[in-house]
Image (tube, rainbow, N blue to C red; front, side, top):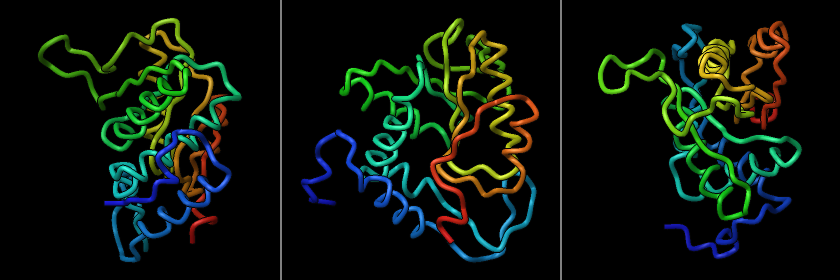
Length: 190
């Protein structure tokens, strides 16, 4: 258990970004692996080690909320599973900071039972939203999430991620005129 009381406040601090950067660096494993995009890589960044830890979730949410102060947004969402802890942490900390930002998650496809929804959470119809992911390679998952959010009636004002592997995501999102602002690029971590 981390007993660092300086982390207890939800307010953003200038060193939050550097602390988060340090945690993300520690989550890099150097070994041959296949990424979700299907590409092969000599390293893997297991961001869930950070986003699912108490300190990591706090730092992620403080850094993202600091970024989102420059945008008029109603909700933050992303593709399940990588975005789930991120959007939840941002929504909770946002509430504590009087920044009302709802969370939503997007399934790869609509479920076949219950309400058969692809987008879960409060309605995003007519809302301005941010799409987030933990690590982005080609941008395909981010774009799939954008499409689902737009189909649900949302206006996507920003796409972001904790780490951009710089393997095509920016170009893909630029082609759709989507603003892309990653927290870190992989070059900052390697």
